Amino acid sequence: MTIKLTLAQVLSQPVVPYAFLISFSSLIGFFFYCIKAGFAKTDKQTSWILTLASSFVCTFVSIPHFYMFWKSGWDMNRLSTDSPWHTAIACFFISYLVLDLSLGSLYYRNRITVLTGWIHHPLYIGILFWLLRWRSASFFTANCLLELPTLILALGSMKEKLRCDILFAFTFFMLRLVFHACMIVALKKSHRLEILWLVAVAVFPLHIYWFYGIITQLVKKYSSCIHWFKSSTSSSATDQVVKKSKYAFLDRIYAI
Image (cartoon, rainbow, N blue to C red):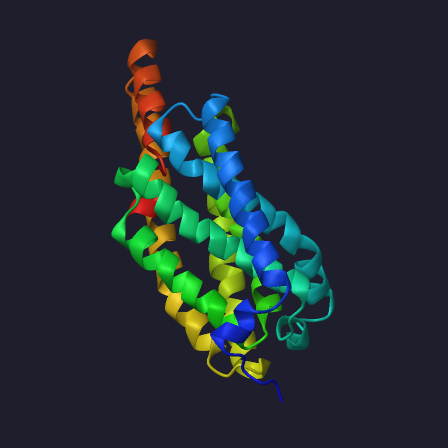
């Protein structure tokens, strides 16, 4: 039987201070480097710097763990363990959440919303510390692949040429809805943390809400294009509308 750690015991693990130190320093360094190097020229781009870094790291770190979990036939024992590596990844994401609120309050305050910032971030910080206390950080590491849609959106927000709304919508549907729903069933059936499936259930409606916003924007985007093609408007008017639609699409998906 796994013994639940106290918060003090979690923080006293040798890997924790090093993980926080490296995470905070690397994320802060990347943030100011992107600003100084001119990679982020607008308020919108600045707001996506930390998210780009976090989603990139989380996505690629999770791939081998997700693969092994899938190959094992969804063996929940793989999502019920802890190690210095899994603990470090959890600390990295906690660092991102803290910095997104703290640096965001200084550099892009108008882009931090109540739901997706001041409620979402503290909530996930609490969930991660809860997993660390129950020595189940491997659950987070394997499920970090759910950050792939965020990575796609972050890349498109930083550089317009990399924007792919359909790919974002597809990965969001497959990971945040289909996989998430299947995970809820699997967690309820066999994970040692009996209430973990309820945590997954609590998050699921937010994903549904976001996906509704994604589909709504997609429909508006492509129906507008079809309408203007049919009405044979001037090419300049069409270009203006399409450009506006591209920049407007999903700009506020995480600000609903």
